[in-house]
Amino acid sequence: MPPTTRRSGSPPGQPRSAHRWPIRLAVAGAALALLAGLMQEDESPVWGSHGRWRPTAANTLFATADGCALCHNAATRSQALRNAAGEDISPYTTWQSTMMASSFIDPFWRAQVAREMAASDGREQAVVDLCTRCHEPMLHHSQVRLGDPISSPFAVADNALARDGVSCTVCHQVTAEGLGSEARFEGHIAVQPDRLIYGPYADPQARPMYMHTRFTATHGAHIQDASHCGTCHTLRTGPNEHLFAEQTVYLEWSNSAFAGEQETPATTCQSCHMPSQGSTRIAHNPGGRDFPFLSERPEVRAHEFVGGNTFMLDLIDQHADSLRPSSSGETRDETHEAARAQLKHATATIEITGVEAGGSELSFTVTVRNLTGHKFPAGFPSRRAWLHVQVLEADEVIFESGAMDEAGRIVGLPDGTQPHHAVITQPTQVQIYELVAADESGEATTLLTRMHDPAKDNRLLPVGWRADGPHAETTQPIGIGDDPDFQGGSDATQFRLALPPTIALDDITIGARLLYQTVPPTWVDPLRAVDAEAARQFVAMVDSTPADSRAEVITWSERQLAD
Image (cartoon, rainbow, N blue to C red):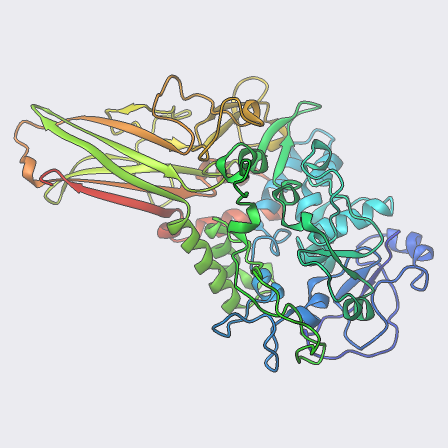
């Protein structure tokens, strides 16, 4: 059972008192007194006895990341964990400002959990268990082992293990047991109390880590496998016992060219989301100097976990005073820059082809190609991408589909779900790539625990997706009709537009943009009615967000009719 020591914080590298600190649970509530008898520090180590540095919180299973920073953070007197340009690429620094580190303080997650709990019809504990397994895994798994599961994430708002999000000792202690199987999905990770820290390199120097932390560095090839990420990035929710495939990133990857075939090596999640930084030593001693016996390791990967949720990264940065992330403004800026670079250069391309004008009609094709190893958009079902297409005569707009207003709403859409379009002829038709879920009555819903069936899923498939491939039934497109241009890796939308008889063809310009939005108004609006501080806080954050931050431009293309 995992007793927790809770200690006051100080920056990594600053010493603390060397004496043994009193043990106490880092949780709120009356369970503290009941569990006090379980806390035997001598029987179950929570940290090493050598040296003076202690993490903010630790128990027999986990420790906060600032403990790992003792040796896995860049130091001024060390060459370890710096790239060829001398930049800090250490796990601690690059992780701090990620959505993994911010999983517990993510204001949208907190607002949605409050809404799900309010609508749970007496199933609050099931909602909390599902949501905390991946968003506050250290505290969740610690409390489950104690037989005292978290009753509400809002009751542990200041708990250090919870606030550390998806931290070092979570991912690096996941064993290979059952990875990739249904038993491990929804965050059901296998973590044993043997305190083995798995890493990608063979023959690790285990003594320094064990001496200072009582964790043992161990080679584990599975830490580099996509199935490792699939534990939390495969999520099924729904009413009662019905399972709705809410997030299937790992399953989508499995049915893609990125998964590799025969002699072709796989391009895993880690390959794209943890970019290689070249060779370097991966640790220094607690005094901030290089270990003389450590050599450089190849292909050291930054723990940036680069994704596409720039909107949430911006919100956390803008509201850092109230959300209290552990990161600095500088590291948040670097994470934002990396995320936007990935969106713009490694996510999708767009092309305008087949431009023809004859009589009173203009026709052309807008093709979008997915560069990712999963669907785009992927992950949480709120995310959508769409085409914003304009036709101009000189500087005058004569056709527009997919414009966005200051509230982040797509202009001119009729009520209801916008269908997938093989051909667009009217401004009220917009090509929106999205997952729309329906409840048991067939009505569209944004309540995860009410989702029963997909009403629409025309998100762009990854290259190599096959109808007879792995998990095809779960990841197949829904609602695309007989569109022959929607296929693995791309979609082509035909535009056939009526032209005014007085149009000057030589002055016509066609422009197309692919926009991406992680939290559309259709997901924010229901939160306005939720009587919970987390919901009110998030809605206020969104309402104060500038219009140009409501969506990201992924890519764009432009063609002159005269070309």
